[in-house]
Image (cartoon, rainbow, N blue to C red; front, side):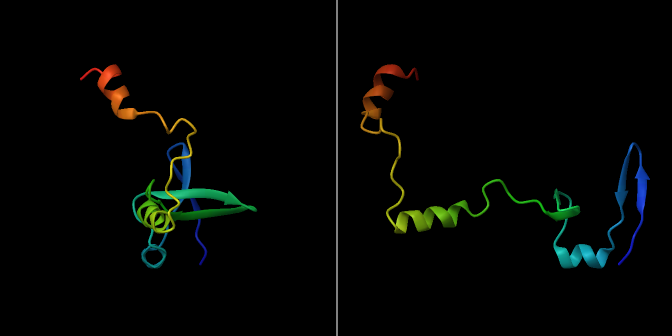
Length: 85
């Protein structure tokens, strides 16, 4: 399919036919990327998309331990003594 670049205020844009929008799953917000002289338009991802399933796999594999070397600090005493409620 061929389309034209049109002037929109100080910017330029393209009109995307409805059928292509439906097939691609694009809606109000999209992500744009230039890759090897191509403009890639993809649906906007949620910031934490896929985190829940990743955490479930980590828990199943017992790979959900803290990596901080100070993890032996008694956080409950710190909370009780240092934190202002």
